[in-house]
Length: 98
Image (cartoon, rainbow, N blue to C red):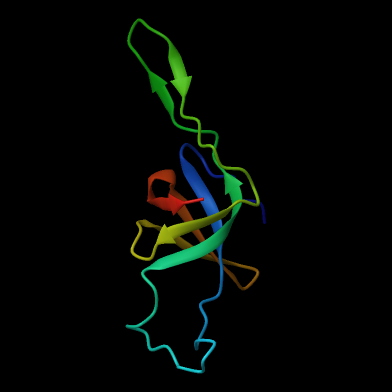
């Protein structure tokens, strides 16, 4: 299956969350991080802006496939499972860092 994000949407393959720390402490659901990490799988072309009587332009998303990113756990998006792998389709504004 091929998914092509539209506008400012980005498809991210989420990294699995560790069940315990390096020291052996088990994470509960509440103690897990508020930030997820993942790899960019696909990037939309950017949102088109129209100015009446003026130029038309697209947003530059400065992301490419393969970039490692961090995003908020509670970000608005669509959570997908593709070939039993967790993905999230979100707007660019929810990505915190690259």
